[in-house]
Length: 491
Image (cartoon, rainbow, N blue to C red; front, top):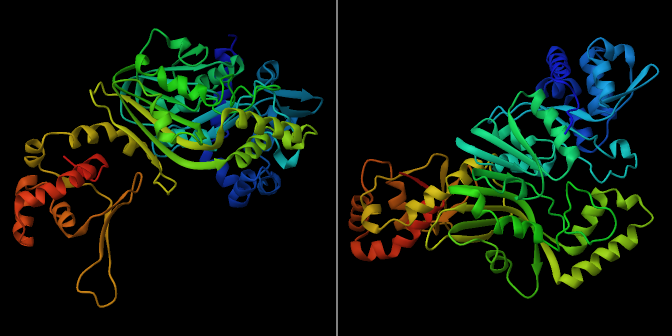
């Protein structure tokens, strides 16, 4: 693979970006709130009107974020135009310069994974019809930023960014992994990702290939991926960044099935993906068939779409709604889903951990509610919390538990009632789970401050409530284990 820029030219470009303060915070401040909201709607006018400084930063914003031609004289003072034009990063036509690809600032305040992303230009700005090229390389998107937020951030030895695209996940992985490998089936994605890595001065082992094939001899502590999961019919050209050649959701299924061999003991695969909903089998039961032996498998369905909404969303994403073939494409997609028995599509997060348990945890939840981002810390503690929840009772009884931070207790009762009807303990971070605890469990959890072992707390609550201690333990044992598993208690 030939790099877009030489090392020296990359250094010159980085120095130019830094010198003009082409960084996320500065750019957002320059275009203002109205400009940001406009770009969120793919409209550039509010941002363009906010650019009144006339300096090099304005010129870079117009060139890359707004994709507008910029006078050569404005850019020649701040960018190495000869380097960029020779690589096709910009196009020079007389006295005007237009963008060939996108270079834009990126920032993540929670882990400081900040820098620049290199991708293809955003299609459809200002409602201009654009049909994306088959090897189109997507930049930062709602899907990629969601994956970055659910990514486990704990230090690891080795990490894999499978299907790297523009390289956004590797920016995050490089903050906490000793060694990062990134793969992609699309050679163009590898070329743009390499410039992303070079501009940000991160060392990534970049490899070409599909799914697990490029890393068939390696194992990892953490794998993150937003694979091409869109379930489109095998007709016409495919967009490599979103569509594979598998039948239905077979690509995500193969990814899960092959993961155990590529994970170190305790290693985790995190996937942002789609899966088929069929009429003949519960979705959790169907996905459970994908999970390898000895692996915990946790799936959170964040959204479910009917087939019509799903088809319309992805036809619009590809610009096909502007094509005269839109109606036929819609019918082809419906026929494809009907043939496969697909009645809906689940969308969400899949997390597989090589726990090597004889009885692995399999958990399939519909979770459409709001979460506190970044949620990676909550997902990262799942395996340790599960281990703790499965310990023998005598070990739990001797443990000095304490409630985690950021919990609130809510009580509800009818007017004039002697006591509450419900005592709810709710997380304010992570998945924001809640426990409808009741008096006994609320009392036990409320006393968990790290000073006393659990059995002492249970005994005191039993005395207070005037109930038998063994009966209280039998009642609360499964609920306490759920609270430990779900991250309400620290050890």
